[in-house]
Length: 173
Image (cartoon, rainbow, N blue to C red; front, side):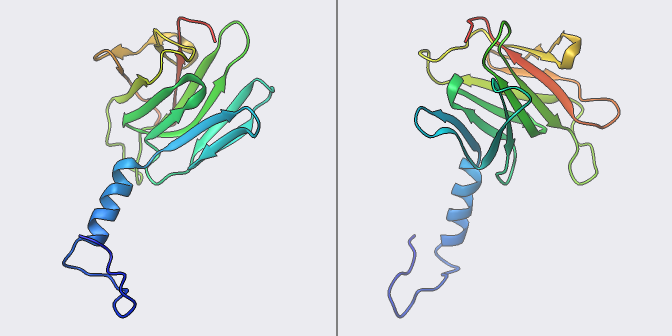
């Protein structure tokens, strides 16, 4: 399968799967990437980043097609919403309790298809700060149910609004 790039062709070939294969690759790898470059500062790919109330906190809003995957480079943390979608994240790197606040939505197209929300946390480098992740729901300090080594499940907000969870870690930033 390939793109028919001959100057006389240059068209979509419905039999080769060009569109299907390209769309599948896009859907499979879709996700946002946030990083802090030493010279360029905070950068986002398929997301937007802005300073929150303090200079030590960054608000990250996904802008990809699915809002389900995000890579947080300062922590080398790949976070996936298995059930629910990300509305925004806030990364707090300084202070006595560094954390990542994640706001998820349990509704799609006016419906509420999920009775429980799930996120998976994958650490991709041990040289970055953060380990022994703990997920709590909002400010209530209710621990999320740990399904396996990386996956946490929790109840969505009962009123249908966004649900906030806080990801904190054992090793300090």
